[in-house]
Image 1 (tube, rainbow, N blue to C red):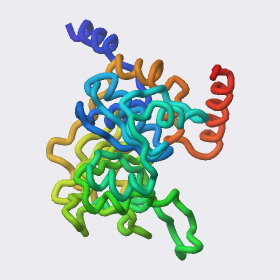
Image 2: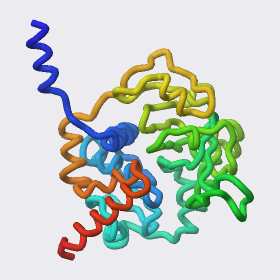
Image 3: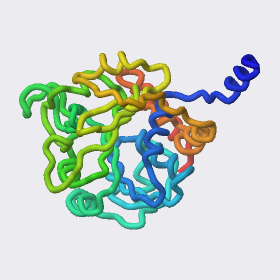
Length: 285
């Protein structure tokens, strides 16, 4: 009997990649009827949103920094034509200044941010790392509308494609996103983090590990985190994607594999960029 069950389990098992698991985790945080916000160069988030829309959240709407518009339509992910959806099919277009100072703070849209650094209380940094502000060791993309949104929102979520002590730090070099330790104007700090190692919430305002991705041990998370991590009593393995979720990601939402760029660095990332651009050149306008 055990052998028969083992064969059935093997047949039911779905092969998936880490980027696909992160997209699925993001999609599970989305509820039907919401309006979600997306920043620039965040394909894992975009793919997760689209996966939610194609499965359990058909009435999901998107607000994006790309084109500064609100859209209920969608299109597969791309690089060279990424603005097309937002500029051609948006229900309404706003200027960036109005988006970050009026639309986002007033409407409290759910949004996933990718921090360059994050501390144990969920404060995060997208400004710079190391050195003087004018001459940092690494200049990050910038805060955009994050300082306008995070003091008041209750719907900030975080994602970290490459979990390390360089990202999960005991003290930020700069703070662009407000966490649970220094609230202003009624915000509550981030609710959730997904990384390439697991999922986390903020029990009592402190990062807490709630699930481990398949094959990841607690010791690895602890070693890769620059502060003490609380462990949930119900710690479990992150549920894997199902076959339909994987099919949608690979065949309809992101057949070019743009989402994989966020887990790569250096030469591997450069090679994938060129590969995607070459494929897009051959696609008719």
